Length: 139
Image 1 (cartoon, rainbow, N blue to C red):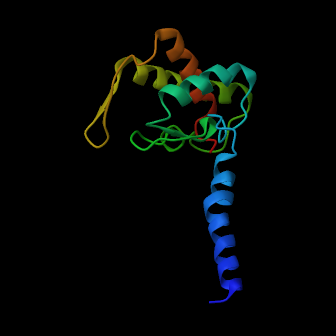
Image 2 (tube, rainbow, N blue to C red):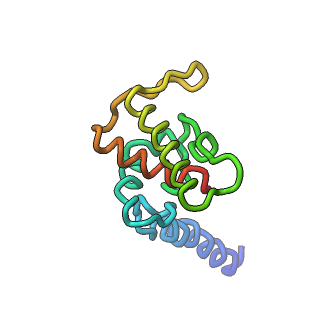
Protein backbone atom coordinates (compact mmCIF):
# COMPACT_ATOMS: atom_id res chain seq x y z
CA UNK A 1 0.00 0.00 0.00
CA UNK A 2 1.09 3.49 -0.67
CA UNK A 3 1.70 6.22 1.86
CA UNK A 4 -1.12 8.25 0.32
CA UNK A 5 -3.70 5.60 1.28
CA UNK A 6 -2.60 5.76 4.94
CA UNK A 7 -2.75 9.57 4.95
CA UNK A 8 -6.25 9.55 3.43
CA UNK A 9 -7.38 6.98 5.97
CA UNK A 10 -5.84 9.02 8.81
CA UNK A 11 -7.65 12.20 7.70
CA UNK A 12 -10.93 10.28 7.48
CA UNK A 13 -10.48 8.86 10.99
CA UNK A 14 -9.63 12.33 12.32
CA UNK A 15 -12.78 13.83 10.78
CA UNK A 16 -14.99 11.06 12.10
CA UNK A 17 -13.43 10.87 15.57
CA UNK A 18 -12.71 14.55 16.28
CA UNK A 19 -14.36 17.03 13.94
CA UNK A 20 -17.88 15.57 13.85
CA UNK A 21 -18.17 15.14 17.66
CA UNK A 22 -16.76 18.65 18.14
CA UNK A 23 -19.43 20.07 15.83
CA UNK A 24 -22.14 18.08 17.60
CA UNK A 25 -21.15 19.13 21.11
CA UNK A 26 -20.20 22.74 20.56
CA UNK A 27 -23.82 23.87 21.03
CA UNK A 28 -24.68 25.79 24.15
CA UNK A 29 -26.86 23.02 25.58
CA UNK A 30 -29.52 25.60 26.35
CA UNK A 31 -32.97 24.12 26.89
CA UNK A 32 -34.46 26.99 24.90
CA UNK A 33 -32.44 26.28 21.76
CA UNK A 34 -35.45 25.23 19.71
CA UNK A 35 -37.96 27.48 21.41
CA UNK A 36 -39.72 30.35 19.73
CA UNK A 37 -39.22 33.87 21.06
CA UNK A 38 -42.23 34.84 23.17
CA UNK A 39 -43.18 38.08 24.93
CA UNK A 40 -41.53 38.63 28.30
CA UNK A 41 -44.81 38.02 30.16
CA UNK A 42 -44.92 34.47 28.76
CA UNK A 43 -41.26 33.51 29.44
CA UNK A 44 -41.96 31.95 32.84
CA UNK A 45 -44.79 29.87 31.37
CA UNK A 46 -42.51 28.78 28.54
CA UNK A 47 -39.82 27.65 31.00
CA UNK A 48 -42.31 25.82 33.22
CA UNK A 49 -43.82 24.09 30.19
CA UNK A 50 -40.41 23.00 28.90
CA UNK A 51 -39.43 21.56 32.27
CA UNK A 52 -42.69 19.93 33.33
CA UNK A 53 -44.73 19.27 30.18
CA UNK A 54 -42.30 19.08 27.26
CA UNK A 55 -41.36 15.45 27.75
CA UNK A 56 -44.89 14.41 26.91
CA UNK A 57 -46.32 17.26 24.82
CA UNK A 58 -45.19 18.85 21.58
CA UNK A 59 -45.55 22.64 21.47
CA UNK A 60 -43.73 24.69 18.86
CA UNK A 61 -43.43 27.85 20.95
CA UNK A 62 -41.76 25.88 23.74
CA UNK A 63 -39.44 24.02 21.39
CA UNK A 64 -40.62 20.67 22.77
CA UNK A 65 -41.26 17.45 20.91
CA UNK A 66 -42.91 15.22 23.46
CA UNK A 67 -43.51 11.65 22.51
CA UNK A 68 -46.37 10.54 24.71
CA UNK A 69 -49.06 13.20 25.13
CA UNK A 70 -50.91 14.94 22.33
CA UNK A 71 -49.38 17.64 20.16
CA UNK A 72 -50.90 20.75 21.70
CA UNK A 73 -50.40 22.79 18.54
CA UNK A 74 -52.80 20.41 16.79
CA UNK A 75 -55.15 19.74 19.69
CA UNK A 76 -55.60 23.37 20.73
CA UNK A 77 -55.20 25.12 17.38
CA UNK A 78 -57.71 27.90 16.80
CA UNK A 79 -60.33 27.11 14.21
CA UNK A 80 -60.30 29.48 11.28
CA UNK A 81 -58.07 32.50 10.74
CA UNK A 82 -56.56 34.30 13.75
CA UNK A 83 -58.99 36.67 15.37
CA UNK A 84 -57.83 40.25 15.85
CA UNK A 85 -57.95 42.11 19.16
CA UNK A 86 -60.58 41.19 21.71
CA UNK A 87 -61.82 38.08 19.87
CA UNK A 88 -58.27 36.68 19.79
CA UNK A 89 -57.85 37.34 23.50
CA UNK A 90 -61.16 35.59 24.18
CA UNK A 91 -59.98 32.52 22.22
CA UNK A 92 -56.66 32.50 24.11
CA UNK A 93 -58.52 32.67 27.44
CA UNK A 94 -60.80 29.84 26.38
CA UNK A 95 -57.81 27.69 25.45
CA UNK A 96 -56.07 28.62 28.70
CA UNK A 97 -59.15 27.48 30.65
CA UNK A 98 -59.07 24.10 28.85
CA UNK A 99 -55.39 23.70 29.72
CA UNK A 100 -55.95 24.79 33.32
CA UNK A 101 -58.78 22.29 33.72
CA UNK A 102 -56.64 19.48 32.27
CA UNK A 103 -53.85 20.35 34.70
CA UNK A 104 -56.18 20.46 37.71
CA UNK A 105 -58.25 17.37 36.92
CA UNK A 106 -55.79 15.30 34.90
CA UNK A 107 -56.74 13.54 31.69
CA UNK A 108 -57.53 9.87 31.24
CA UNK A 109 -57.52 8.73 27.64
CA UNK A 110 -57.80 5.12 26.59
CA UNK A 111 -55.65 5.85 23.54
CA UNK A 112 -52.93 7.96 25.16
CA UNK A 113 -52.86 6.87 28.77
CA UNK A 114 -53.14 9.19 31.73
CA UNK A 115 -51.93 12.66 32.58
CA UNK A 116 -51.94 12.95 36.37
CA UNK A 117 -53.56 15.97 38.00
CA UNK A 118 -51.71 18.69 39.89
CA UNK A 119 -48.21 18.20 38.52
CA UNK A 120 -47.71 21.92 39.18
CA UNK A 121 -48.98 24.08 42.00
CA UNK A 122 -52.06 26.27 41.24
CA UNK A 123 -50.02 29.42 40.55
CA UNK A 124 -47.73 27.55 38.14
CA UNK A 125 -50.73 25.91 36.47
CA UNK A 126 -52.16 29.34 35.71
CA UNK A 127 -48.86 30.60 34.28
CA UNK A 128 -48.51 27.54 32.01
CA UNK A 129 -52.16 27.73 30.94
CA UNK A 130 -51.77 31.40 29.93
CA UNK A 131 -48.64 30.54 27.96
CA UNK A 132 -50.23 27.61 26.13
CA UNK A 133 -53.43 29.58 25.52
CA UNK A 134 -51.47 32.39 23.92
CA UNK A 135 -49.22 30.26 21.69
CA UNK A 136 -50.96 26.95 20.88
CA UNK A 137 -51.45 26.41 17.18
CA UNK A 138 -48.70 28.78 16.05
CA UNK A 139 -46.34 26.04 14.96
